[in-house]
Amino acid sequence: MTVADKVLGTLAEVTEVDELRTNLNIRLYDSHMLDSMKTVELMLALSDRFGLDISPAEFDREQWATPLNIIQYIEQRMTQ
Image (cartoon, rainbow, N blue to C red; front, side, top):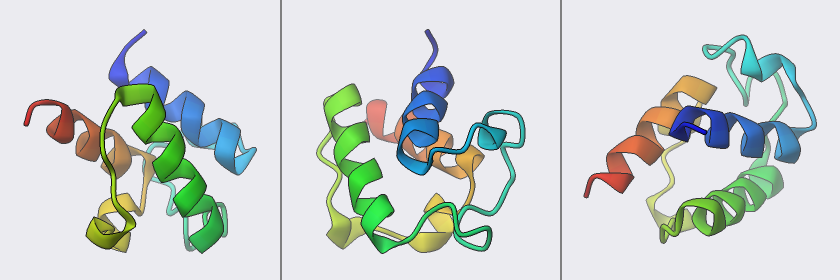
């Protein structure tokens, strides 16, 4: 399973929306799939799944605006 598959699976679980698996550029906040509570839930789930320390203090809404952005963020964090 790729990083993208794991991120999309986690994102689909948190948002309860499967559409984001096929539309990687969907605007998660504009579409109301993510809000502040679900964002924290997503951060915790991604932290657990990838063994990363993702802090709400480093959150940038634009960086987390689409599934593709989140995938790229996680891939970048894994190489650090």
